[in-house]
Image 1 (cartoon, rainbow, N blue to C red):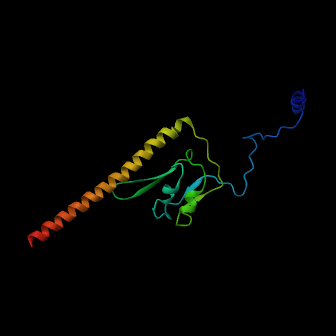
Image 2: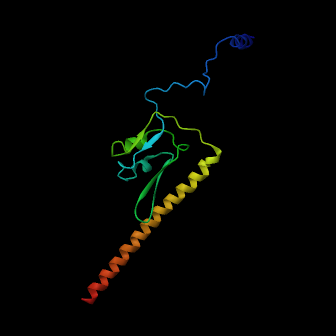
Image 3: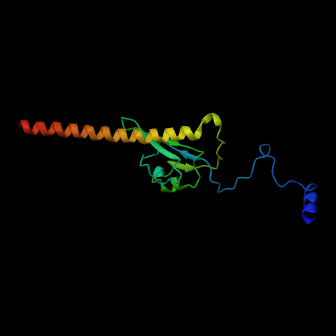
Length: 148
């Protein structure tokens, strides 16, 4: 009976919730929002990728050695470990901007899994090519030494 009167009383009280999206929610000063990245400041050490608990950051590499930063806002838990691990101040930072909702059209999960696998493969391919070129160079040097 007590619960019934409490529920009846709640019908006449002002709601506790806000009318989002018509009213913006309160964002505290220390809010941990979206991860930002400044490519000009990055030294490409990949520490942020190594310390990211859910694996929301990955770097891909082309055959010229240029690396590309990839970030998935749907996988990120916004723990700020990547910001703490970065040795270069301002290369990776956390903003107060909340993450946008993931949409079905973005295919954010399956697309991310494919991108993640592709990035790891690109780095392995680059390392294999670099190793092959070093072996060729060593073979050329060895044959030059034998000719002398």
